Image (cartoon, rainbow, N blue to C red; front, side):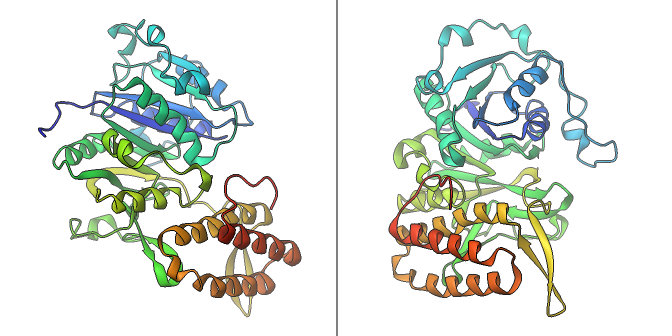
Length: 379
């Protein structure tokens, strides 16, 4: 199959209570050097009127502030020209392919401030559907419209380099066997330090995963071609439409954490290649702050521990990883009994609310082994 000429890319950005980050991300995306793309923002039923703020930004009534001494400021500043044409859909409208008449009413003059020729699409999911569920709403919209060749999942707390998308498309079009590609992800608060080169490796015997080349300096990285990973990180994941038609959507039962791992393992199971575009760079805020964490002393050593509210989110990680192993590495499931003992000891030694945490941990492991998935309102 010959490479497509300037294939269309749908960029999906999921927002949940993070409108400031989303606006900064949009400012960087809408000035990128690849011109055949459409941006779709899905609001996962935010509780802080995020979508109203994003609409106000698109109308030219609001901007977010980036500090003048921020070395990444040029990626999102000065603001692109407003207003930016946008269309609002409910989840039902979006999943049915939107309204063609609405999207065709704009003229080329409406897009003079951005590098795209399509309106911004804003979707209200109506509920917190999690990472996979929220992204799937937009993916169904794209598939129903059937006018895009690639879908780029992009975290809202990122800013991108101008050529990031162009490099992803370039690599995707170079080999028909490639189905999913990741970017070089660097730390927003430490812009020269790598967070991950594309994806993560699963350390099966240790029941965990690690980012490829994490905390290495970008300037010191020599071999960027022979990189192995088990899955592409969901913070920047471009996937071809044909791949989605082959392996399906993201698994919504995970709700949050490890859904990108399952998606990548499923692709590999179908002999679909996963690759990394070293010249596609973006900067990610996620994990860079200590929000939800506290430092505690024990035996003269500092330990970073989750606060109770954050711990309830971490439980999705424990549950989902067990479920992932159950489906892909069932022979290694006994290792999680050791993991449970280890985590329990940590709680007893370092944490507050010990009984509550231990009870929550038991539930998370039990749910993983028994396959009780989806959103948990109370652990």
